[in-house]
Length: 381
Image 1 (tube, rainbow, N blue to C red):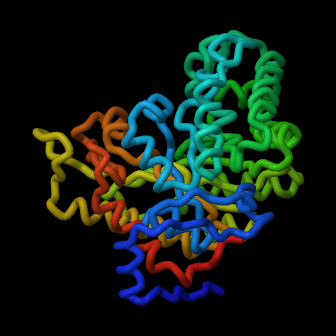
Image 2: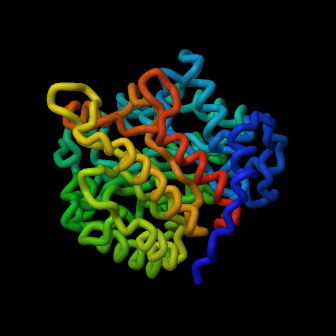
């Protein structure tokens, strides 16, 4: 039965949001790898401090080039978020551009930063059809390697990557975007080498062998909507569980747009959780249409409020489902967002919670308020 929320009194919320008191996380030892260690002090009204009261990790994807070089960016990353995701630094093309030669420097810096700031790390991603090294594939669908060589390369990569970071990664996105929007398996080099989707089970088994303590996730977009893709991934997870494959969670990327209706996100989180899975919002952003003659000027004056509503509803859906253990915007500053480039801005507007000057927007404040009022949300274990 869904537990009703018991919001804090408005006066209490106001005090939380206005205060700058130091906060120390209250998670119990054993439920959190860093819980037994003393936490640094952070503002009481930061997203990470507010979310910690219900055991939720608030994360962000991190641009490795800005971390440590951009003072404001670095400070926000440390103060506002309790988990971090490697935006690109752990992808295959980045860590093994030359076969057999591994470059871990940027990823190692992120892990060290997270340890210093008592943050957990989401590893992204072990197996994807994009951002592969040229020696393996230039498009994810064709390769000059034999099927046996593809299989060997994948196994070697998973063991090398996971053993390097063993004990440092909380959640791994083991397999990313294996299905198209029609719910059909993508005909990638992995699918072709295995002659089907058997590569998914093998990837999870290898990942678990390499680091038995890491939480292993399948990650994809458009799972928020009930439909062919969400249903296909649901059946995949059921099948993997039946085979006793060590899959622990499903990541809902959460790339939303105000031009489409809001998805039935909570019901989908709940149905995957009912399979015994952890769930997480892993790459959240909310784009909106803009005027064709101006950058980031909404077509509709109400568009920013629609964006705020989508952010708020997404966080509340996660808060309402106890198995939803983390909520991660895909970056936080609009100047670092993938959205304008991918959607050919000005076709899509600024989609994150801080503006291009790294000042908090309305989207940030609705998340902050929702977390301040979420004392009655189910506590993550």
